[in-house]
Length: 244
Image 1 (cartoon, one colour):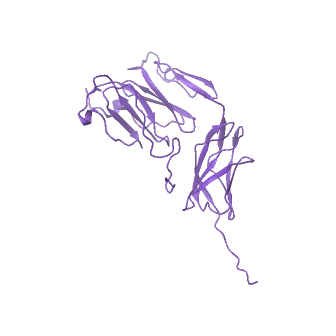
Image 2: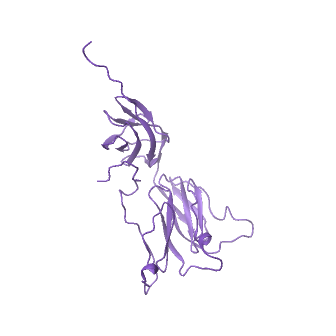
């Protein structure tokens, strides 16, 4: 036969983010791996996702989640074969959490209860300061509660990366209480903001500065803060991803 026979390298998948989305579909999902080019198709269970981008290095595929329900495998197929994501995708109903100042957590709709501060305190033990902020993990499978003194409480698949009381020197106190907090897009870190403009980063949260370090002392306490995104909101910039 004068036609050549080609051996193709099959795809591999090493990551998916996020790992959950709405029942109606439409969520942007990133798949990471290798050899992902070549008539690429992605299925969530038996439903076909819409492939919107494959980066030039064939390591990152962007898809739009199809409608579905339950927990399903995610499979990517190319001319060279198929690969299954290391984590399944879970369809979740809309919902939300509310957190009380004592660390009590109340879940509504599709939001699942993973624990509360009163549930982990010893008999007679109390919080040193009230809970002032709450944020959840990218897959909504856990959450963090943040106290005014910088204490952190992790539940579900939320990992503990440290707290402010642990890094203060003996006898040292915050110049201003923590007023809000947020997690990094990949869920591998978080940062807390204090009333005096101080910023405290843990895990992979990057420190970019704070008001006290700039010699700025606001006439009114800082009441809120939000990160300026370096990538599409909610989508971690995997190595090799096209960021343009």
